[in-house]
Amino acid sequence: MSGWLKIVGLGPGADAMITPEVSTVLLEATDVVGYVPYVNRVAPRAGLVRHGSDNREEIRRAEQALQLALEGHRVVVVSSGDPGVFAMAAAVFEALEAGDAQWRTLDIQVLPGISAMLAASASVGAPLGHDFCCINLSDNLKPWALIEKRLRLAAEADFAMAFYNPRSKARPAGFERTLEVLREACGPDRLIIFARAVSTPDEAIRVTTLEQATPDMADMRTLVIVGSQQTRLIERSGVPLVYTPRSA
Image 1 (cartoon, helix red, strand yellow):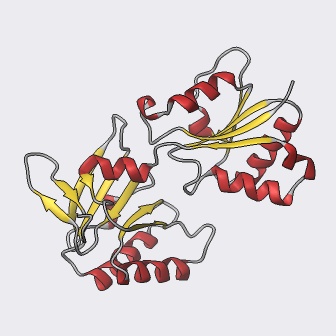
Image 2 (spheres, rainbow, N blue to C red):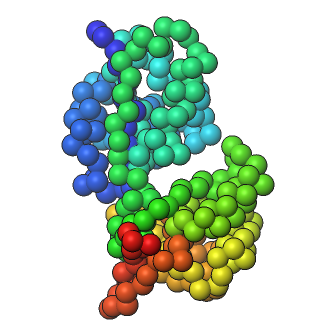
């Protein structure tokens, strides 16, 4: 049996947001490897082994997947959203570069998914309609000083900004400081969007300003978007529409 390795994104939550390409590969796989909640999104079936692991075991998980593929298994590494956005694709290539030379002979593909960032943006309109940047607010793999530097430079460049992993129970102070930095750099009236669990039954969307934003509006299931100076709000019944003009 000839093994292969596919690194895929399962989208932000709803099964309808898994691409047909990814659905097909999951049906062909002998093994699925990933963080436990994401592996559990793949239905069990005969002939499929699911290998779930802890969130902080990315490199070990990648090494396991590469070795299984080398042994002839058809392996799918799963991430939520898109695998190339703060997810497993980079971890697999990091393990590949440092690991067994035989792994480089494998058939390895990255199959894109709908990212939480794009799903969150679509849920309110088009706040990322012009130039934007994306920042992971977790300081697990980089120092907080670097995060704060990037926040200030992004604000200075007037990017709309999308934030992953804004606030965990282990590091609640980081997002509080993020809001302080953004108020200093952008002013209190800048639009901010809290999009929690987009596309799932728990979805909750809130549009407010930096002045009104509080740290407890975000958790690890929340994608946060801060508009640029040009970002506009269209009032209507229910959740307003937010967009950033392309001509800005």
